[in-house]
Image (cartoon, rainbow, N blue to C red; front, side, top):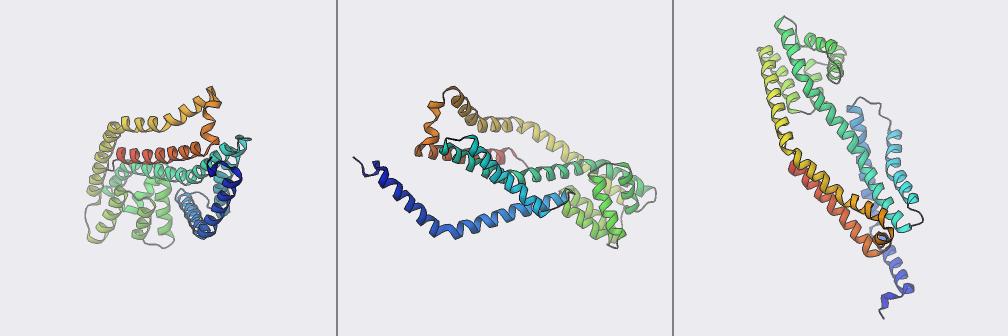
Length: 291
């Protein structure tokens, strides 16, 4: 009979091993967790600020706690009395929830930047026509604010407000390029700043920028159509194990129970999740082509 078949030996050894591991690496673990949580909170607050939302540090902290510990605790009690299943689901959902909040705000911010670039075609056309009629860039930008909607209205309005409070037009445009870090916006800001110093035809420059943006958008749409199949395949391949696991658990819970209440099953589940995450990230990198 194996020595490890006796629970009164295995459990104390496991407890001692956990205590030693915690004693040796607790400082490093808590330090990394603190840095991770601080960086995630900073990311959420930055994206909220760039989205024009009211930034409240305490509110952001509560959101992160609810999305991590709150969701993890909820899944743990949903799986009760299966403690091992509850721990696995609680830890997994807690980690996922903690990562999900910054991702959501980043997606919202990226969508705003994309909408801004899409609106630049009409905005630069309006500004070019205004400059041809004798207006300066600030007056042409004010015309865009009066005609077009958000997000370009809010961003251009902030540029005009900054100039009204004494900041130079060039500095206000530089701040705009930092808030919307897109190549087309950088090109627009650089063109205005250079031509205001050296002289030149801003209207023709705006027409060139509009043409460049349109060509870039055509290429992006073509690439999106070509990679749509790969994106869908990645979504299907990533979701199949979870769907099959849910179906098997609903049809025959006893068949799936060893996956959650045995050490080998939990190790296999953790390995499966890690491989799914790695595979999903790799597929996303393959099908994402930057123009």
